[in-house]
Length: 209
Image 1 (cartoon, one colour):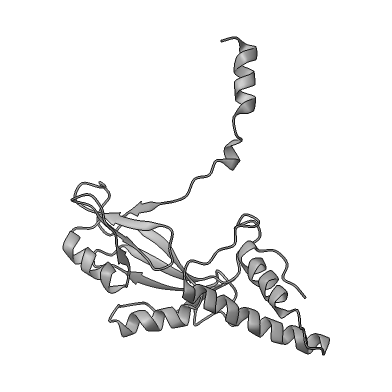
Image 2 (tube, one colour):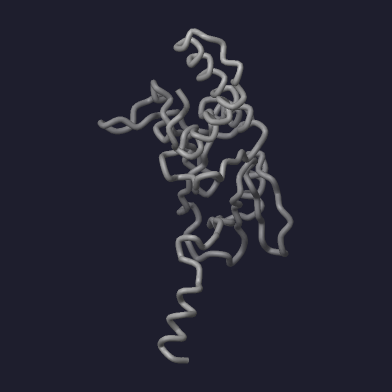
């Protein structure tokens, strides 16, 4: 193949940044597979069908799963650290605690470090709480309702579960109420306003005024 032919083939290939790949599974190290399985089932995570020797569970509303099993990783049990995203951290923590799951207290990020309690403005990415599985693998629950700009590709708006959609609708309703107070008029076109607001939350775009 001549250099010219190679250059032609390269130009026909898709750009690397447009290659569609999705994070599917995170492998975590555990010392007791049955104990870990019982813990994650208690969290309400779905037990998926897998080949023998592999345990896979998926959090409700998540597109990414967790796997563990004998020989899947050489990492030390308890060394994994990962993030979970919730739209209402306080409600999520209360639900887990009521199910007997040990969850740390809620704190939020400030310029001076972590401070106890929810972020006063309920800003996305600021509030968090930690839970650990029996081996000590750490899951940091983070409250996110509005993504930073560029975090979600334009037009790719989706909701992982009915509860996420319901929470987004409640936030849109509250924001729309403030919108009507500012304008002093009833907005008959509220469905379009809701839609624009909910898309802006996920994409990081400017919300409607």
